[in-house]
Amino acid sequence: MAINFRHSPFESLEPKLRASIEASLVRHSYRRGEKILQQRATFAGIIWMRSGVGMVDRRRPDGTLEFSSPLHWGIWGTEALMTGTYLGSLIAATHCVVSVLPASEARRFNEDAAFAKLVASWLSDDFALSVGTASALNASRTEERVMDYLSYMFRQAARQDSTPDNGRQTSVAWPFSVGQLAQFVSASRPHLSSILGRLESEGKIKLSDRRLSVPAVAEELRQEATTAAASATR
Image (cartoon, rainbow, N blue to C red; front, side, top):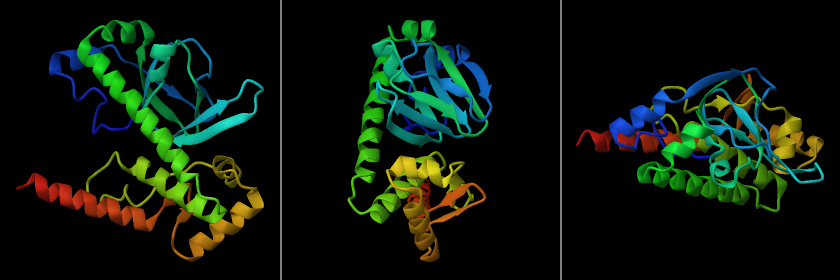
């Protein structure tokens, strides 16, 4: 997936090419639990998650889970433009609205050097995010691993909005059960429940009303946004 854009994944392209691509997008909506993309399915298009929360699910050939993680926004499925099939499934964890650049259009635009360069940057972002997620899950102590993972996910989900004090930086949608989070961080559900209770009592996280807050990271983002806004007015 790729998330390094502010308003549109095509915003770095020259206006005429961007307009042509965006005119080719097809919008779809999915109910909670519906599959947006199926692992190993033939490439059907590049997905832009515009609203809602998805869950990425990757399984080994024997059907056992290899990787699972939230996707709050961004571009998904770019690798299939190159490989021909999707490396994982994308499931709607809430009601989701996506824009699809159909396979035929993606292949046609990929003949343009500027678009091909953009796709390469998405693939690079995808690799960096995979490394970041793996690093967040690298701690040997479960409590540290849970805290690192929730902090990393909160930061990625909140990055789409850089306006200070608008409320969306203080919490992000988190439509996942304790059981699903246990799956994300490779922990037993009872142990994880105990850890979450302790982290909440210490004020390090807040999980309520299907939303996640990590106050320390939220403050970092607020300061970053304030600094960026001040720099822009100079």
